[in-house]
Image 1 (cartoon, helix red, strand yellow):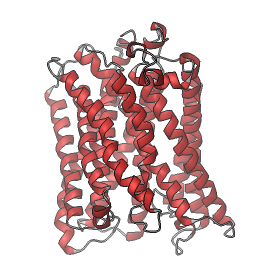
Image 2 (cartoon, rainbow, N blue to C red; image 1 turned 90 degrees about the horizontal axis):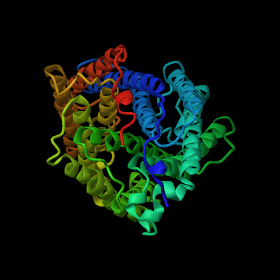
Image 3 (cartoon, one colour; image 1 turned 135 degrees about the vertical axis):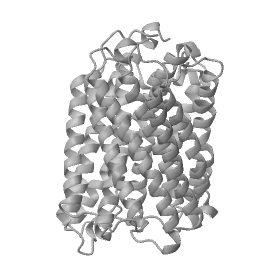
Length: 494
């Protein structure tokens, strides 16, 4: 049976400085990648002229950069809050960051020096069949960059898993399995941050190992074409990895909601039996749902396509019925103290929930035949990111530099917040509208009939960039304060 020592925060100093530097770095990457997105939308709207070759290089950098930064911020959030419950080894985080930065250098070199423009999904056999657009060395650099980041994450999760087992006795107890199956009382369940960290460690480790296998296979095929790789099998592995990784980024970031919102409401976020079961469902669904990315591939086994559609229906239930609904209950009548941090964290859960709807719609086979290769798809995952994971990350950043004297949403913070909401909301809505009108995605040059939507989206994208830049500047300025931030002020909270 669990003891209080396993469910209460440790009286240890978290890796605050390393996490703050990581969040600043990731915040800057978010802004730069958003600027690249703005450039692409402006080019599609013929507001600027951009060579199509450069467009696809920027598209590749934008996708890899945003997904990578989302994974980095999610990992930093998990590490920071899990450190309240288990004694993580600080050196592992630095090694993780070293591999991550090495990967970034290799990826940027592949794109802007080597000319690689095959998209962030490195879909086999495209890295090897560039049509002369890039050499094999550029593709190899891109693949090795991803591999380096994967190694960093595997070391990260190895440390997380090792310490969870050391503190809780087994991984099943860290996941809350005894509570789920009724052999232990809910009062003995691990904290929400621990359960979330354990679940993410399981499915993202599997996803990264699968991704590493297909990366290495593609790398060998680059230089030894006789080394055969089944294209359909490789595509399954790639989309399994990609789907799991980006979802893991969001599921790591939501830990900030579980840990910070109780500071504002005075109500602890409890690990109920329903909460534990929901996270076990997430663990299974996030891996089983990936075939909904492959509904265009008619050669796929029929049962897998059906599974992708059916699981898509159910995958939103744990999110909507537990995290989103629970958040509403926590906020109702709580007298929450609204400031930039709490507003962004709540926005993140709301945006994540809203983004589930167009994803489920696209996961229907009959709809997917018409919509999958349109801008509907980037519409739904931009909602997930801009109004979901990125909003939660900016909320965590605002909380990290919050001082005891700073209370409420002042005029500047309110203006930045609503600029971001309007910009991100309008930007993603234009994607969905364009998708409903069958505007294709990934096209560098657009027809005249599509230019109006592109230009409106560009205006909204500019608002997003301005707000995001202000978030990062505000965070950087807060790092220079001598007064302890929220992370230090609340170390002993229960």
